[in-house]
Image (tube, rainbow, N blue to C red; front, side):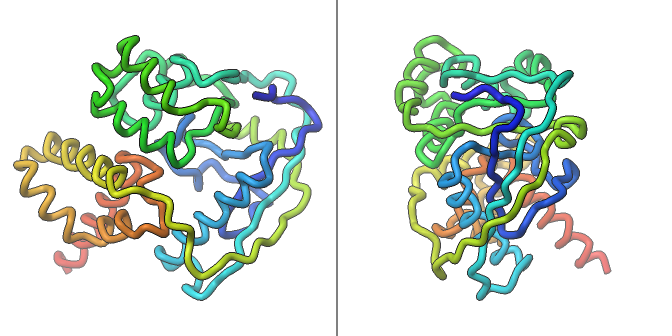
Length: 267
């Protein structure tokens, strides 16, 4: 895992060119919280760009026939004064940091400890890692946060195969990034089908549990309503990898869908 340093090149994959990153447009509930994510791996950025294009098609942000995705290249400038932390390994602190930012309740102390950092770096939770972390969150390896569960989960992540990521979490951090260029990627009409049904189901279970607690509705009723939603259709679309974002992000999408439906019915 590389340390963040002046002059290094970082790559960001998206369905569009990004020359002026904006925190306001960055999603919440990511591995290291809300921020602009980049990697030292051009190949990883290309993979993320393809996923981003698939979701943009579904959300009608681009034409459904669009086949061009983009990797934007940045050079790190003067980072003097930035508060940064880089997790060198996929260890217990790294795991707890990811879980704390992916869910709103676990490891609140870790989330508070990370609050003032401008940049957080570490291994990225790729496809297999996200499935493993979802099982961990549901105490599938034992009580979440216990040494046994942590070690079991980290052991399954195969850390040496995970790529790196840097999350630029503040405006002054983003100001240190100099845009160089954007590279186009021609994508096939269909994304590679890599998600598993188990991972999708785990996200659904966690989402239903959260909504049931918030609303007081029986979990069975919440599940029935959710499975009839557009969000659920997208979640189980094997080309979108929506499950990758975890239950909190999917839950936010579902809440927006419900709010839009409620506004339409009120008119």
